[in-house]
Amino acid sequence: MDLFVSKYINKIDKKGRVSLPSSFRNVLPKANRNEIILYKSIKTSSVEGCGVGRLKEIAKRINNLDFFSEDYDDFSTSIFSEIITTNIDKEGRFLIPEELKLYAGIKTEAAFFGQGHYFQIWEPKKGQKNTEDSRRRLLKEKKSLRMILTQKK
Amino acid sequence: MDLFVSKYINKIDKKGRVSLPSSFRNVLPKANRNEIILYKSIKTSSVEGCGVGRLKEIAKRINNLDFFSEDYDDFSTSIFSEIITTNIDKEGRFLIPEELKLYAGIKTEAAFFGQGHYFQIWEPKKGQKNTEDSRRRLLKEKKSLRMILTQKK
DNA sequence: CATATACCCATTGACGCCCATATAATCCCA
DNA sequence: TGGGATTATATGGGCGTCAATGGGTATATG
Image (cartoon, rainbow over all chains, first blue to last red; front, side, top):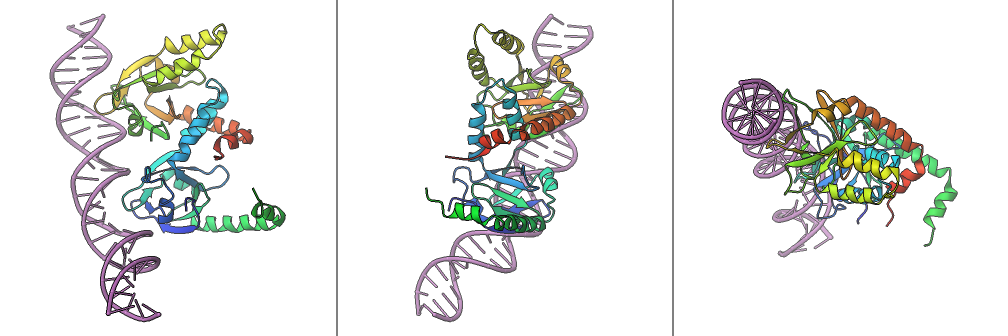
C-alpha cells in the first residue's frame, strides 16, 4: 500500500516526540524514509504532512512560473517558508514544531488521519468532530458520492 | 532536502554576525559551503540570498527577457551590479552588509524565509506581514493555488 | 594605527542516537 | 490448531553531539 490510510492516535512524550504510525512510515520511499514535511492545513485547523518527494514536485511547478511575477513570490513564500521539515528518528518518532501544535491545538495526543497522498494530524477530539461533520456533509450529497465511487476510467 | 524551506529567526550579535540556519547551510554544495551571495530583493524590502551556483540560473532568467525591453536593463543592473558575496565562518555565521541591512530595515534580528532555490532575509515583523499579505493574495486565487498543490501524475 | 573581519574557544539548550520495556502482532512447530 | 517463541510497534529515559550565541585575540587592510 503506497497511500496514507486509516486513523491512529499516538501519545506525545515529555520531549515532544510522537510516533509516526508504522503504516505511514511504510508509505515513504525507502530513500527518504527518515524525513517528512509538515505545514498548516489551508482549510482546517490541522497539520498536514507528507514525504519530501511531494514537495519537490511542487517546487518544480513553482519554478516554472514567471520568475519576475508577483505570483511567483506569493507561492514560494506561502509554500516554502511555511513548510517545516522534520527528521524521523530510528524508532519512527518525530517532533511537531511548537507553532504547528499551537495552530492545531495539539497537546498530549496526536490523531493521524490518512488522506491518500498526504495525512493530517489533529487534536483527537477536533479530528473526531471533523470526521463526523465531513461524513454528514457527504451523506447530504449521496448522488455525487455515488458518482465518484462508480466512476469508470 | 536540497531546498531552502521553513522560517528561522536568528539574532545578530554585537559584531554584526548572524547564523545562517543549519538547514540552509546544508543546501549549499559541499564544495562552496562557506560562501553565499546576497542582493536586494527586487520586489520586496528584503535581502535575498543563495549559493553561488544559483547565479547562473538567475542569469538565464534575465537572459530570457526581451533584450530591448526596459525590464532587461533594470533587472540586470539591479541584480548583477548589486550582488555581494559573503563568507561563512566556521560556526556558520556571516555578516550582512550595512547597506543591505538598511535596505531591509534589519537591526537586531534576522528572519530567514526559505524560498526553494533561494531564501529571503527580513526584519522579523516585516517578514511576518509579508507572509500574511502573500497568503491573502493567494487565497483570492484558489484556482491557481490548487493548480500548484494538486498532485496529478 | 584603527577598524573590520577571521579564527579560536566556551556555554547553553535542543535534538539525535542509543538502550530498555511493555504490549501487540506474527510466526512456527509439535 | 494451540500455545510458546519471535518480531514489531509504541513509548520512556540517559547521554553525547550539534546548533545558536557570546566573547577574546590574531590578522588584515586601508
